[in-house]
Length: 119
Image (cartoon, rainbow, N blue to C red; front, side):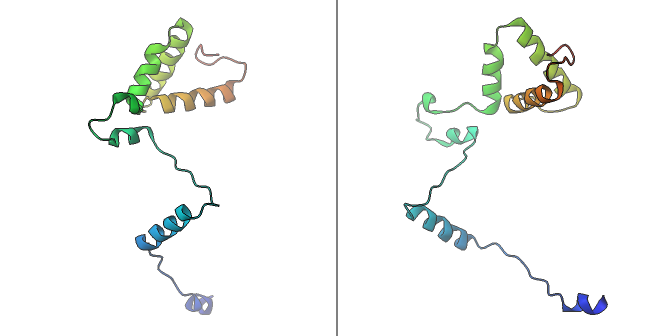
């Protein structure tokens, strides 16, 4: 075992930004390759200051507020408040992304059953 360990060479992996930029340029130049970008909701706030508010996607906190306020059905409001309380009890941040993930997880776990008055 000692002999084997002496034969192993360790290589240092480095990051070369120029190489990454060159690779990205090649992808963008090639018309045959398809490329997509995943852009978060905060990206639209990097627009020029004089850009129209209609061109902006709300930040997650604002989107959460808008969605929660738009829900009028009492049973859905109660369900969301129950989930929000769970988040607060566990000291977790409450926003629309986590809410939707939590609902999906509950749906998968509960199925047709009921959990904390949520079905």
